[in-house]
Image 1 (cartoon, rainbow, N blue to C red):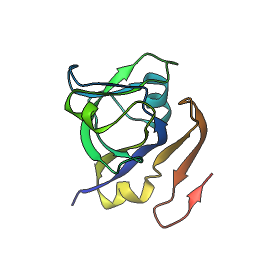
Image 2 (tube, helix red, strand yellow):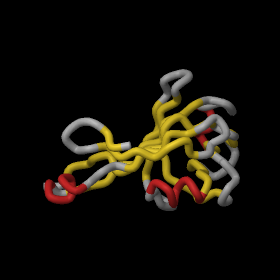
Image 3 (tube, helix red, strand yellow):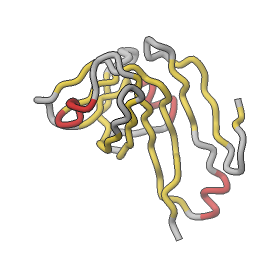
Amino acid sequence: MLREVLHSKIHMATVTGAKPHYVGSITIDADLLDACGMRVNDKVLISNCRNGNRLETYIFRGKPGSGIIELNGAAAHLVEEGDKVIIMHFALMTDEQYAANRPTVLIMKDDNTIDRVINYEPFGGTDS
């Protein structure tokens, strides 16, 4: 059996733009994608910490080092520049894969650089 479980997360990123007339997705700085293992076209769940909106979309790769976290298309109506968001990526895993999975979590600074990286342990706690 496959279960959908957390693979990686970008925690408290700052939205740098919202373009409702752009082809839909979220554009994320390539350095952040590389740091947590997310990929272009991966499906993500985004939670807006200001208003509670949650949405699903897919990833576009942004310029490395740009700090870009930009919502495009219809999703742009659910955020404002400056909002803090949590970006969660999930993966389908067997029980064996789950036992070895340690989701990578990027804890972000206000300027969308990484403050620290942690890994979630499957049976409670975190590993800093």
